[in-house]
Amino acid sequence: MQNLARNLIPAAFFLLSLGANPQTMKTDHWSPTQLLERATHLRQLAAQGEGAASETLETYPHHYTMLAFRSKDGSGELHQNFADLFYILDGHVTLLTGGEVVDARTTAPGEVRGPSVKGGTAQELKAGDVVHIPANTPHQMLVAAGDTVTYFVVKIQENQ
Image (cartoon, rainbow, N blue to C red; front, top):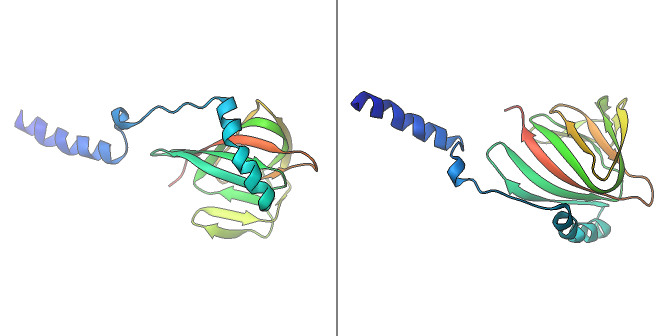
């Protein structure tokens, strides 16, 4: 029995350090209406800035959630360690995936940006659509003049 306790206690502490204790995790719920209401201030920030604004909603052990609004094209980007899962709440956007980030530069650890994506595949996205973009995949959002897009994002750690 003493050997069992000697092995289980370190294993339990190891699992806790990994964030594997579901009793301490809270459940989060947002309706599309709540998210769109919350995005009102992002629309205002985007109008005062460069046409885009986002905020982190919650952070978890291996992923985090965001809310984003865009009224202008985004830059080309690639996340080396995180996949993106987008749920389009409102609006319309063209998503380019694949190809390569033009004039790529590292802007933060694991984050690559450039002015655009060259050679990607275009997909039209509208409210209700969901798209998964794997880690290490170049992508860019293109917003037509007069259009906007509001979307919920799950950033999922795929690589370390």
